[in-house]
Amino acid sequence: MFSNLRSLIFKLDPETAHNLAIKSLKFNFVPNILDEDKNNPLFKTNLFNKDLDNPIGMAAGFDKNAEVYNSLFKLGFGFVEVGTITPLKQYGNPKPRVFRLVEDEALINRLGFNNSGAKNVVNRIRSNDPLGLLGINIGPNKNSKNRLGDYVECLKTFHEVANYITINISSPNTEDLRSFHDQTKLNELLQTIYKEKKNLNSSIPIVVKVSPDINENEINKISEVLLNNSVEAVIISNTSDSTRDKLYNIQSHQKGGLSGKPIEEKSSKLINKFFKILNGRIKIIGVGGVDSGKSAYEKFLAGANYVQLYTGMVFRGPNIVNIIKKELKELLFKDGVKNFSEIIGNKRTS
Picture (cartoon, rainbow, N blue to C red):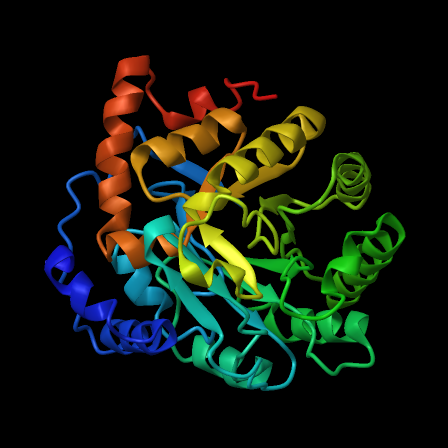
């Protein structure tokens, strides 16, 4: 059905199409999807002591205001991450701010953490219990004079309703946010977060989402900080503000973060580099170009324990999880494994 609708949807402005998708999920206009592999042991896994049907998650950015996470669980996602959410409501950057690169199976966005604010979102979650593992992605307000304080404020707001909290230091659309990749700044941020966790007597797992654009030297330094601060998982990676040289679409020059197929290989190589250093001590959630069984398979081989997607659903539709599982099952059967986790890190990329 989606293939028939896609040409119509793609005539709409991408942000309008996204808002329509959220409304459709909110009011159950998306048909129920038959999942033939719901309890298949091939895909079973565990994240933060919660059993999951599968390792395929919805990345932050789709359900920014935590409006449709339960609808996403019903579409088959093993876990869902909402946000990015800031302490105060903000509009984000001026429109147009989302660009669809059809030939490249990619998006460029410069949304800028548009969201309805932490208080509105936490109230929504409290009134609508999640059906599965829910992560909340947090960040600072654009004009904040105390970004550390913003992260702490969001932690205090969400630690009781989330299954994990992601510290977003990697969006290219909030000025100077990526400076938190600096070893000293990241260490200060994580120490501040863990101090507040202790004050709250909270055991909420902390995840850090890193940029795909970091250089070789930064990988070792960031890994060291993550390990020293007992971070439970790392998301590799976010959108890229480079990687434009092989794009075909005329909008490839647009400023913002690139997601989808063009960053697939880049993120997989980065995953593998972190995998070799972290050596199983921190879980890896792989993001970037996941839209098929093969692309998920490659992420697991590179060292990801779980995957997330967003752009893949834009191009392949709401049945994306079942499409991935069906294709992935064939690849895993060829390997003769009983669970996908047996292939994690089996590919040593350069």
